[in-house]
Length: 219
Ligand SMILES: *[C@@H]1O[C@H](CO)[C@@H](O)[C@H](O)[C@H]1NC(C)=O
Image (cartoon, rainbow, N blue to C red):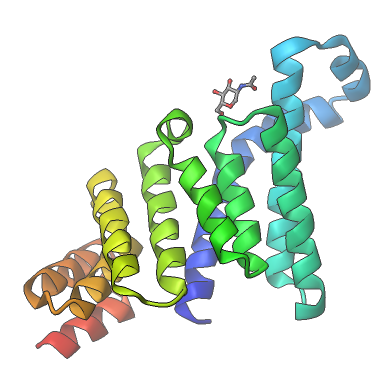
């Protein structure tokens, strides 16, 4: 598994955790009987919330399936995941998790500019409030990763560094962010900062091969 796949998987797990709380609530509603009835009786905000969450959960499941599907199926499943995210957003545009889901699904289809736009929306002041600090940190890491995925122009590296520094400020144990930050500093010839970032990454996760390799290169 390469690094991108691995971090995609970790992001996926983070997302699944977000989903789980919602899913358990939904399951109670869905399997406890009486969904259509309960839903039909509900009106206004609570109904919108449940419908939006249902699209989100379905989208997250489709994205997970897309990741394990064979290439021929993977892209269309990611497309369906993006559609579900879109429906969730139409019902509630201030839920950051839905924008992140959409971004991940678009990334999976290779639509990097659109993916970046979704992450930008998720991280915009009005929307980002709905995320916990560690989730915000993960979203910033993801945006940095997408920025660096394209051509590694200098301004992209600078923007990625800004995201990663913010990610670490929100969660000093975000070892993926620390490690990528080290790599970015290294690219800019900021070896002192790079070494420090790799060391911090190893403090958070002693087995991190990327960070060990980084320190090796800089020694
Ligand atoms: C929209 O999502 C946010 C964040 O999860 C939540 O706080 C808010 O209550 C939701 N609004 C509606 C109408 O569902």
